[in-house]
Image (cartoon, rainbow, N blue to C red):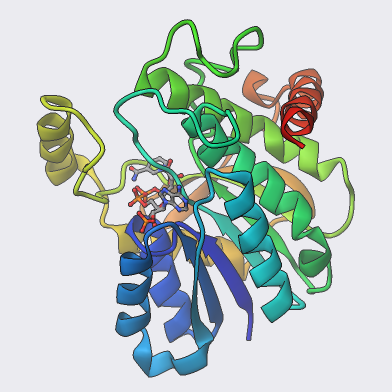
Length: 277
Ligand SMILES: NC(=O)c1ccc[n+]([C@@H]2O[C@H](COP(=O)([O-])OP(=O)(O)OC[C@H]3O[C@@H](n4cnc5c(N)ncnc54)[C@H](OP(=O)(O)O)[C@@H]3O)[C@@H](O)[C@H]2O)c1
C-alpha cells in the first residue's frame, strides 16, 4: 500500500483525499498549521490506527518547511505521492518571519522546497507523483519579476495569481531534474470548501452563494485526484484539470508553462532562499 503525504490535508480537498486514501488502505500523512484541525483529522481517522498521521507545521516559514521535511523523511523512507494543497486566502498583505510575502511563501515557496527536499523519498517508490493543487490553465496575472514580494501593489487576487503562475512554472523546473517522478500541476476547478474564513465581506458572502450554486463537493475532486494517483501519467511534467470525476490534460505548450520563465523563476527562487540562509 502507498504512502501519501498531503499538505493542507486537514480541510477541504486535501482532507477529502486523505479520508479516501485511508479507506483504500494507504498510509496518509497530513501536514497543516492548526494542531486543532490535525487532532480532529486523527479523531476522524481513528479506525485506521497508525496509517493516519499528522504533522503540525506552519509551511509559510522556512523552519516549518524544514520541520515537516525532517518528520516525513524520518518516518517514511519511501513516499509514493506528495500532494501539495496548503494555501490560505489571506485578506491583507502579511510578511513571514523570513521576510517573504506570505502567499508567495506558503502557496509557492513551500511547494518548491518540499518537492525538492523529498525527492530522495519519492524516487525510492515505483511510480512517484508530486501533485501540485493550484490553478493551471489560468492565464490572468503572473510572476511580478521586478517585485515578487508585491511591496508596491498587493491584493489577495494578485498574490494568488502570482503564486499560482509560479506553481505552473515549478512543474517544468522540477521535471528538469530527471528521474521517474511525475510532476503534475492540477486544477481542481471550483470546489466547495467553505467556510471562506479568510475573505472580506462582501466577497465572502458572494463566494458562499456561488459555491452553493456552482461548486463541486470536495469528495468529487478527491475522487478525480485519486484516479490520477492510481494511474499516474508519464514521468516528467504534465498539467491537468478536473472535469466532474474525470481529468483532462492541459496543453503543455500553453505560455504559462514557458521553459525560459521556469528557469528564470528557479534562479529567483534560489536567490530568495539564499537571502535568508
Ligand atoms: N477550492 C477551490 O475551489 C480551489 C480551486 C482551485 C484551486 N484550489 C487549490 O487547491 C488547494 C486546496 O484548496 P482547498 O479549497 O481545499 O483549501 P482549504 O479548504 O482552504 O484548506 C487549506 C489547507 O491548507 C492548510 N494551511 C493553511 N495555512 C497553512 C500554513 N501556513 N501551513 C500549513 N498548512 C496551512 C489548512 O490547514 P489548517 O488551517 O488546518 O492549518 C488546510 O488544511 C489550494 O492550493 C487551492 O489554491 C482550490
